[in-house]
Length: 404
Image 1 (cartoon, rainbow, N blue to C red):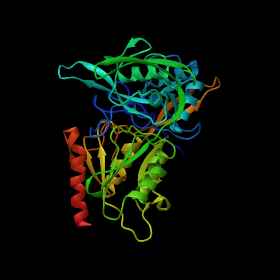
Image 2: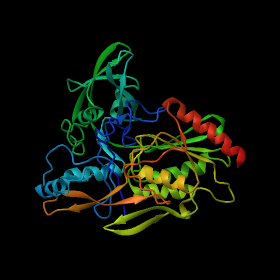
Image 3: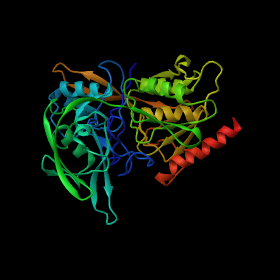
């Protein structure tokens, strides 16, 4: 079975991740040392799905706000369900969702985040510029303040709305139906008090869901912003290439609101030598997901590296499934703040008019039997200050290395 998370969360979390790489945080803060990774890339729309057959697992999209779905059948099914996690899509929207989880999006290549100055005045700034993107070629830089999109002031707009405008989607509506490749968008920016405009042509871009960097003392940090197609293999390669025996790994799942759950299970396989990852119910029948030792990154007598998982309120769905498995199996120490708590499973149903309704069919649980829906995961080491999370993770690793 293929599972998927809608890579979005709505007003429930009031924050979003950056690009398809991460969205759905719990604060209006940015990626990096902050746990909420609240940037939101213009290529990510808050909507993504997996394949047209199988079970799916969504993270917080809900029913939407009455935007046209192009299929009364799907909308009627979703409305009748009364389920906040169910969704209705047009055929075109659904195709857009599939492309998003395949790591593709239409946009200009910027991620944005919300900030407030000392007086509490809100603003939107550029959190990241994708290399080789239209924004990168135009000279847009990280830290630039985004004042307006196509002449519309965005400083006090939710990042979801800003993203929709960058993509060319209807304001506040579903962002999975963007303007076509080649359409233009005008950005009004501010850099160190100098205001300027850039007109960019949207392009089809590839998202980088996994990034790797080195922390102090040889610790490898692997940031997984979403479980899109191929992300688990990138995690495996990162561990095999960069994590030497005993040096330690920080698996950063802050702001990760899910993705393909089979990718999350494969990522679990990188750190677990087989065994149970999660159980779930499908129409009342209990099923199980297991780690596959063939996907492990440790071989040839090498010792599995000590592992810390960083989480926050934007860690959702498939990311919670992975975290719960590593915590229950005693494989990792979890550091950060309580996760979102989304553990329901949706199944897509294609209707005769081509529209698709995704309806909840069950819930999943961790290896110890914990249900995460509405509860989330409590870290082994809670960290209140966002800026302290990475340093605390490194400190924990130093203790694990001493014992190993």
